[in-house]
Amino acid sequence: MLIVGAGPTGLALALWLTKFGIRVRIIDKLGASGTTSRALAVQARTLEYYQQIGLADAVIERGQKVAGLNLWVRSHRAARVPLENLGEGLTPFPFPMIFPQDEHETLLIERLRQHGVEVERLVELTGFEEREEKIIATLLRNGTDETSSFAYIAGCDGARSRVREVLNTGFPGGTYDHLFYVADVEAGGPPVNGELHVDLDDADFLAVFPMSGSGRARLVGSVRDDVAKDHEHLRLQDVQGRAVQNLKIEITRVNWFSTYRVHHRVAQQFRRGRAFLLGDAAHIHSPVGGQGMNTGIGDAINLAWKLAASIKDMSVDDAVKSGIMFAGTPDQVYSQMKRLYDHVGGFGHLLIMGQAGFLEHDETVLGIRTFAREVYPRIKQEFPDTAVSGVTHAGVAI
Ligand SMILES: Cc1cc2nc3c(=O)[nH]c(=O)nc-3n(C[C@H](O)[C@H](O)[C@H](O)COP(=O)(O)OP(=O)(O)OC[C@H]3O[C@@H](n4cnc5c(N)ncnc54)[C@H](O)[C@@H]3O)c2cc1C
Image (cartoon, rainbow, N blue to C red; front, side, top):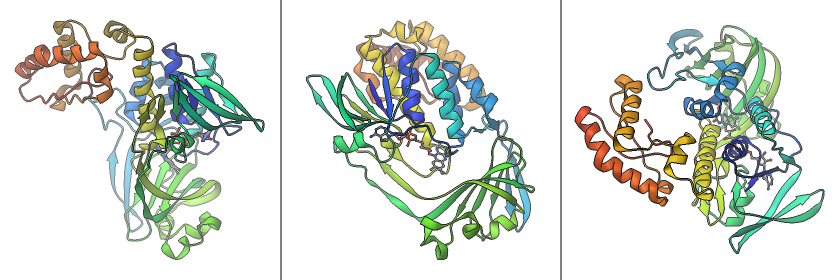
């Protein structure tokens, strides 16, 4: 497979496919990976995926757990919400995790290298076409075009995706009016204490995120309309408004500053023939909630196991052995489900979501039918209040 783009999505896809024994080439038009922090939040679901390949501990070791959210009003901390055990009983990783995207990419590159795969840098995809069950891709290297053929192509090439352009797939959506700024700073003051702080005043919006290393923080704020027009030339001192004073932050150094508009767009198709769109190439949305990078990594893992199952003609048993789904006799599935239910404890209901691509495999269809006929009624009997509505790539999702 040709993976276009070595951001978090492409790197996660390369790592998972390599784990499944699928040969990949991963290219990026840039000479080095990003050096700015961008996505900070690593969600519990991403850590759960990483746990499957022994990567979660490294993220937790290098990253930082966020213990609390502090809400500020009129220069005073009005409330603190503990976050450390926010998802207790739902996930082995119940805490918000901060791990800057540049360090995250470095970790994925290190792991990939351990599996013998190097990102090919300064190689740009300029075009491709599908011919006789092959993707014929044109790659620009050192000013020269070369042509190579692949079984599949994965567009992990970000919001301005060339793969999406070649597929001529629409990317409808919109852009929010407000201009935001982001700054990684070295600073002192009460909000630089390893926790999350948000100013709720009627002043400009400001959130302060912790970063690893003492005295470091990420500021995310809104830019006032009166200065937003000339945003190409803005500096932090032009945009920091009353909120910075309200939170009593003393900034000593700005390591990175950028302004951005927030878009929300989704590609009209995620797949056409042998070409796929993943990550920002397929969907972009507000960074609030910290889901952009995480959903891209989720796309990658979802596609990786499905492709592996399809290419290697994996049986349900193989899939179970590889840890990608539950299966077995109804009794075995039921006991796995029960263990899962016991694990989620008082969560109240088990939500099992279906994923369309899953239905393409006969054995999976059989598994779902078995589940529907045999297992579901027994779960309903034992847990009458439980809502069960489908099957995911991991067998079940809660
Ligand atoms: C300020 C900010 C804060 C954010 N905060 C969060 C957060 O807290 N949590 C979160 O989950 N997300 C966050 N995001 C979003 C997150 O950064 C993106 O969702 C993420 O980078 C998407 O990863 P990707 O691998 O899909 O694409 P990208 O990271 O954009 O990577 C695409 C790669 O493809 C390469 N490429 C492009 N075209 C070609 C080509 N033709 N040939 C070869 N290579 C090519 C590019 O050089 C690039 O390296 C934030 C974003 C910003 C800007």
